Image (tube, rainbow over all chains, first blue to last red; front, side):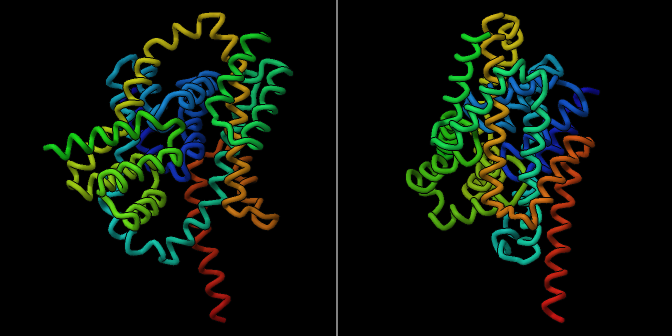
Length: 174
Length: 182
């Protein structure tokens, strides 16, 4: 049963994952944390952190991780990872020729002009859902978040270093 | 047979050395696929990128499928995708097996107490940068704001909003088109 749910959830994530990793995050979070409660909000944040520090796309990383923790088996990872890639296979092999010829088609363009502002909202919702007591232990956590935001916005620092610095800070202040 | 090995190892490298995924992977894919192996011309690469971006799913996976498919059909696309996925799969699986033991450690818990708020900040940052590239203005800012509120406060599925955005885009286009014709 859990395998069927996992398959269904990651097929949906693969099929509706428009707008890149961070936008996909809101889908993953909705399904995995809010809807199925396979992970707590805190565990989800930890996986995002681990994903940032390890190579590879977050869609794959989350599928592999969640596939394992929900089933306790490597087959859960294999299933979820395959499921998240499967819609891409079908779509790329079916529609890539059509899209190559028609990516200036006004209907396709209008779909994407409608999707673009929505994607911004999706990423915002992922951030808002994670702004909770589990992730913000006290006022010092808010300071870490504000400083991290300024750092990534104002400098070209790689997100990995922000996480490493925040980890050091956590070790020394808590 | 040889090409399959090259294809796999090339995409394995792409998967293993790019942190954060998505756009961070594109220059490395270009280097391997266009400059090093000449599997795609520069123009073909840009076309493939346009298609990979237009389709749902993971950008790097879409690119692997397109490149693999061009070289060796469906089998090629499977090999390239396996290459992209393998490094994260192996690494994350090891982490999943051992991570729960890690987090029980009080030192690790302190470190993660510092990391969690930073992760939230890392997700806020692309909201601001994509708002710029999606040309969000005072006129259309209600779309992302109401979308985020619907998910956050009312628990609406992001899938509903993606469908609404796509349909909204078409309706808007037809409405504008209609006005121009009259």
